[in-house]
Image (cartoon, rainbow, N blue to C red; front, side, top):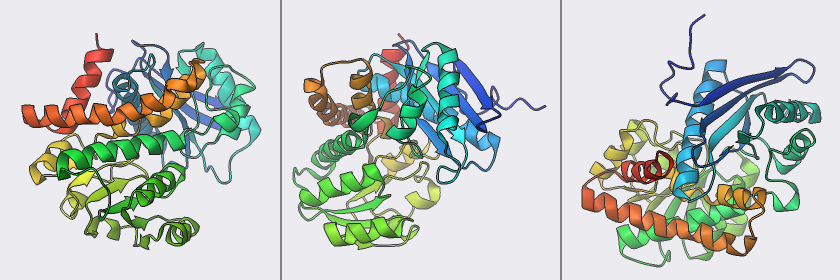
Length: 343
């Protein structure tokens, strides 16, 4: 058998990678604990119809590493981890599936705390919680997406101040890719601030809603990269910044909610060379995990929104340092995170 975890390019010295299965429910899950130096690893559970086990491993390793950096930069007392369930979230979900996941988390004894992510919901997390206490994002207080969207909005504000030397979104065009819970809330905030929206999604109902409620222009999934826009906002799945798309982008700013937006690490430098200001994904999209962490640790929530809004200040620091040091913003953000969780 070929060893494909230690040799995976995204392994990055993960502390623990667990394969969990349960025959009766059909659970096939992978739990990745990247780093616990600052506290228990925390990150959501993604359910996706992966084409292969190797693809699922690659995704969970990338995502869990990203959570370590995200949580550290956000100033949270938690480490980074992630879990994925291999399956179709529209057809394969059962309460028993998530109960089995809860039993797997319980066996880890608190090293990893989960929450909802792509393909999962607060209702799914309630089923996990029936078997373990190591879960957050529960009940009507559980949805973190509005806080992720708020962080993206204040992050975009920091980006236009730095790159465009302006405070207002009036007259700016945003090419927004992905109208899920976070993407739509982000689009709503941008619209309210005066931005013109050009949107793309595979969900026709979401596109129609954006047209009707936000006056958005709709383009095809691939055409979003060719839009004459001031800001490109990737809010779907990752790796949409790559050599092909970068050569087509007209925007001067990338500020979106998706995880792992850079297909490869060198794309950060390519953005800098092209004069595109990239708001590092794990900095700008940290609002959701801030909310979940406050909830899980029973921290008084009166300071939570202010904590999310400080994402704008953090990005302003990243942008200023990147200019001063002649480095990509992605590298500067990595260094800020590593100074916290590696010491």
